[in-house]
Each structure stands twice: as structure tokens, then as C-alpha cells.
Length: 176
Length: 195
Image (cartoon, rainbow over all chains, first blue to last red; front, side, top):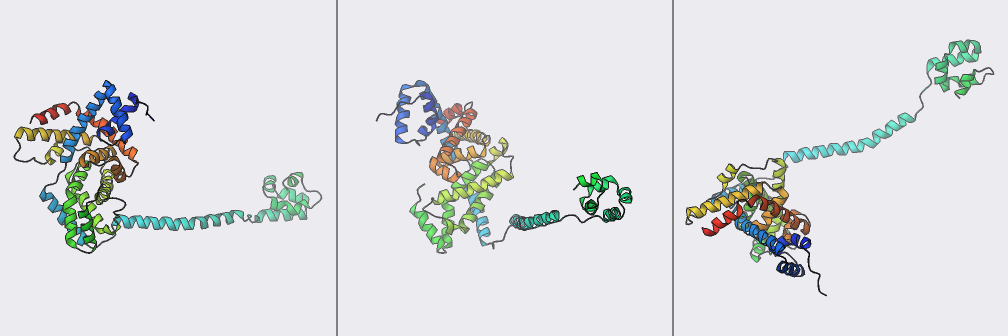
């Protein structure tokens, strides 16, 4: 099955791989065919090839070590190899932090549970309010005077005994 | 990357406890690893430190090397690049001064004509400066391709990325270098050819 010819937009991203001989055979043939017919892409190919040649000629010579350097590094490697292995300090610190995080992770659900239990327990009745309700049972008139309306409204617990009385104030009933 | 039978034999000897094997492995691979590290870090001291670390790690973990998965060179390069990346992170100011780069370049063979040596030095300095302008990932790609002639697949193994990513990194680096080198490139090339 004949392959469709490449357009310039399809060909140009493949040019460097073509220069590097890294294309599959079928792609290579398509690029070659396009370069034969397209002067613009051929010029781009020549420019890529020129830079590639310059880089291939220069980069391998960068950082070539001399024998002195090689010997110095070899001595350092030998000395490192003969040294007993110790855990480096940053690694120890990292292990410490990891242990701390682990312990905190273990403690966190426990502390949250404890907080939930504390929230679930109803608050104990307040001593002065209980006294006031007792007063209400004893004498409704004096109870109304002794218990301020705000305190009665805010404490449901306190008014429960008072609700049983026939003339309980309406605001107290509302709070039930 | 083809593994030479020689390397297999040396590694086998090392694993049996032959200490001379380590020296042979070092002699075989140290120049390439140093070139790689220096081209990536553009600093002689950092490069030497990374070469030492990489070889010490490789020798201590030689039992972990699996010849079926990668060649020894690929494995060693992977170790070296990982340590070079640690240095990038530690030392963000990677743009080295040109004067420093020129001071670190090595002299060419004495038999060459002075003008030829000068032209090569200039070309090398220009390329080193251009390499310094690339991001570390693009520099890795271009150095592995041109400095060591690796295929896109081998580069991908070493850089831990898909081959298509390796290819696109080479292309991006190439375009960036082309932009930097074009003002001086053809002239230098001509000078080199004339020399």
C-alpha cells in the first residue's frame, strides 16, 4: 500500500531524527522523498545537518579528563570504598522526621475520638439554675421573680420540674 | 547500547572478589562518565565529585546490576545523571562565567598548529557557553546524543522518560543551540575546516 507523501509541516519535526538516523525505515523513505521535492525543507535539513556536525565535532571534546584527574578520582574512590558505610546525617534526620510523622499519624485518630466523646457528653446542669427551679416548685410566684427570663430560656434542664406545675410561665413551656 | 563481553567478564570477576576488576572498570568508563558529568555541570570540581560518587555507588551495588535490563554504561550513566540532578538542585546558579569555562578547557595535542588549536578552543568555548544557556533536561539530551552518540531509546532509558520525549528534548535543544551558535557557528566551522 503506497504511503501518502509528507507535507512540510509533517516533515520538519522529523528532520533532526532523519539527520540522526533515528527514523524507522518507512518514515525515512517518506522524508527523503519529500526532501527531493521541497527546496524549503531541503534548506532546513541542510541547516540542521550543519549544526549537528558542529555539535558532534565539539561536544565529545568537552570535559575530557587528563590522567592526573583520573588518578585523583581513583584514589578518592578507593578511599571511599575502604571506609565503613555509615548512615549519613541528613538520612538520619529524615528517618527521625518520618518516625515523628508516623507516631503523630497513630495518635491523631485517638485524639480525635477522645474529642468526639467529650462533645457527645451532655453538659451537667448548672447549680444556680437548679436552685431556681426548686424555688419555682416551692412557690411559682417567687420562682418567677427568682429566675430571670434569660436564664430560664437558656437552660432546658433547669425548667423541667417547673413545667409540671399548673401555672408554668408560657416562655418556659416554649423552651421545651 | 551493546555490552562488550570484556565488561561482562570484568563484572563477573569483581563479583567474585577480584579487586583489580574495579580498577579495570574504572579505566574503561571513567573518561566517558567524566565527560558526561562535566558537560552537564560545567564545573570541574562538581564533575569530579559526581564521578566519584557514581563509581562508589556502582561498585558497592554491583550485585544489583542486571545486564538483561541495561548495559553497564547505561546503568552507570543513569547513576551519574541522577547525582548530577542532585547537584542542579543544590546549586541553582548553573550559569558559569565564560572566563571560568575557558580556564577549565583542556589544551589540544601539541602537534597541532596554534591557529587550529585556537579555533578548536574557541569552538569548544562557544559550545560550552551555549550548553550553559540550556535547561538541565535539554542539556542532558543534547550531551547524551552528541557527546556519547546514544540512540533516542538509550537516552530515554537514562533520562527515565519515553523515547518520544527524548527526541523532542533533542529537537528543542538543537533549535536553541542553533539560535545561539548561528552568529558564530558557520564562521568557526569554516575556520576549523581551513585549519
